[in-house]
Image 1 (spheres, rainbow, N blue to C red):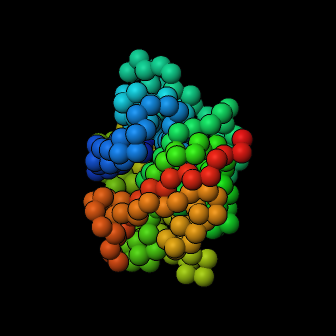
Image 2 (cartoon, helix red, strand yellow; image 1 turned 120 degrees about the vertical axis):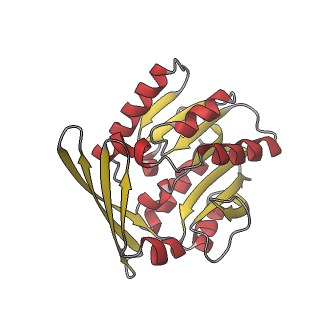
Image 3 (cartoon, rainbow, N blue to C red; image 1 turned 60 degrees about the vertical axis):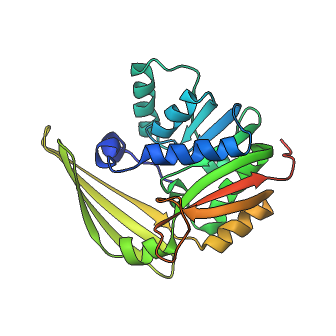
Length: 251
């Protein structure tokens, strides 16, 4: 699972349209509906920590896990600036995740799981999450849908801008591999520098994800549109899963 490097330092600036408040509200409400008001929650692929910090403010004991040291460094700076303590930051590959005990919940958002790898590798991350999840715990995660890979990312080019930089985002979708290759070029005007990175997103059938969750002790309670949090449609670009652990963990 590849992590962001230079792109991590521009992530927040290019991601201003992300509705963290709506996502946080959905997750908080879902936890509350299942009487999960406290305990240890892991944010898998925490990035720069926006969601982690919101859940920590709700009173959850947060573990923030990411495969990118750069993302975690930004998160740690942000945490220190805000004077927030008690969050455990772990640099780990989600397919090799190793926690110190069990958790009552896990979240993974903004298509972290699409970056993990081909489907058998994704299933390893689901298996690891199930291993540490307490019975009755909730697993809330999203993925970019096959529709988004085929029709939106496809072979399109997008340009993102903030006050100091411009990012050209080029996609190529390989149907045989169910994989989108993403090449990004960032022009940082303030320092007259340019950064280039390449990474992949994989497309997974939603029924296959549901089956993998069930194989590792989760019952999928619902799958919704991951942007509106309403009903999933054929043109939903993101799907969000809510799974309940129904088998006692073995850790």
